[in-house]
Image (cartoon, rainbow, N blue to C red):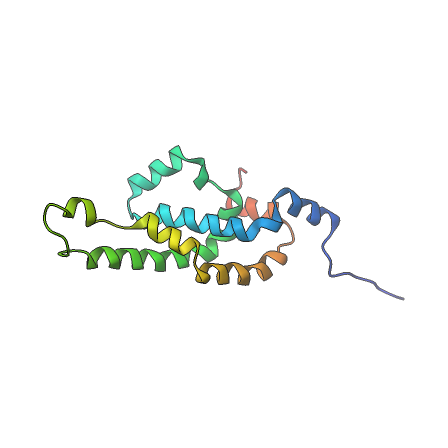
Length: 147
C-alpha cells in the first residue's frame, strides 16, 4: 500500500489566499502596524473611538484576526517611546511655544515605525506563520464571528 501526500496548499486555500491578496500581506501587515500605532499611541479612548467611527482604514478583518496578536505588543513598545519623548519635551520650550510643541509626535513616530527595519524584520518572521494558516476565513471568524 502506498500513501502519497503533499505539503503544497490545496486549491481552495490557494483561491482563498488569492482573494485575500496573500502576496501583499507583508505590505498589509505594515499598514496595519501604522494604523494600530496611530489608534493606540494617543492613549485617548475618545479619539480612538472617533477614528474607528469616521475612518474605515482602521477596520481591517485580516489585520484584526491575523496581524494584531503579534503587532499589539510591538505597538505597546512604540507607545512607550512616544510617551517618553513627550515627557522628555516638558520644560524644553518657552511658554508661548508649549501649546504647539509640547505634544506627542504620534504620526511622525508611526511613519518612522512603518518604514523601520524592525517592522520589516517582524513582517519577514511572520511569513512562516502565515504560510501555516490552513483556512483564512476560519481564523477571521474566530476573531470576528459576524464577518
